[in-house]
Image (tube, rainbow, N blue to C red):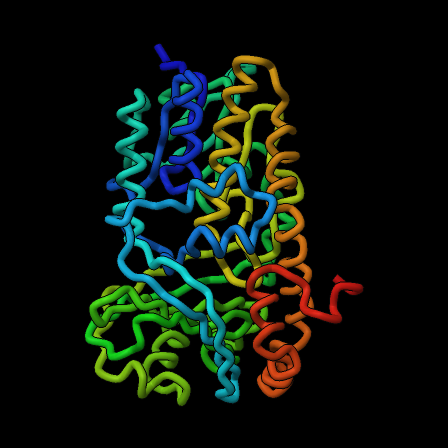
Length: 387
């Protein structure tokens, strides 16, 4: 006989786990699936996480959810004080912006333990899909072995299989221009400044995206690039990343002597949230809902917030009959404006990105203040009328 619960969460990343905690606290019976065999392993992320005061500036309407940024210190590897943006021609723009660099594995495992302590169950090594069994929702490897649920939360990353089966993720979003492919090494033996996060732009190594050096402390850093195939001349992500490490004039001396670990790769949605993030009995959170800030690539914070909202709404739906449309209304109230502005700014930047000189001149025109505005999802001075 199939097991039955109130809520099934597909995905044990930040969005899914935070959703599960909220639903469990409100009395729901919750089961979590994840395709990974160990929670939080491997990490496919830069692990950059703004501190609470920065998120209060970035998302001023998210006050009810600011507690998610009070992460335990044992899940923090490093603390960065500034962001330095480097143009394709080497011009540097630096501004204050404080952030933690997480041990994301530790963070996710801590929250997973909380899920279990609250009475939830987690099933690992299980990629799942969504099925309809005579009008009942079933989530699992297949219909026969799945778990029945009253509500489902898709937190299975991008592109989400569950969100696609629910009709939330549609083909019109899945275009090369809307998707970044990220390639990253965790590098050791580096002499980079451990207090500065760096973002590099240039078609030679990051067409349609940017390169990053995110220091993790003790001479280590997450070093990677994001590219879009609509901008790239060749399908060779590792080649672009290795060029960034060894041949790029902007970085090769800085990264010289560093020892890269295994390369990781992942895909990221960069055209703002999906048109709809819910159906009758399914909500999508985090990357599964394309909740990534297009002008900076940040997705951990938005996953946590949308996960918390979805967990709360799941409980209200089961216990009080609240429609899942309330989930979308609430996240838009919290971060809708910022996601809209960030998406519009990324589309505007695309007009300049294929030409390094034009992009360099655009950054010079924006200046440090304007660049910070873009990265923090605000229209720079003078651009508000067209955003």
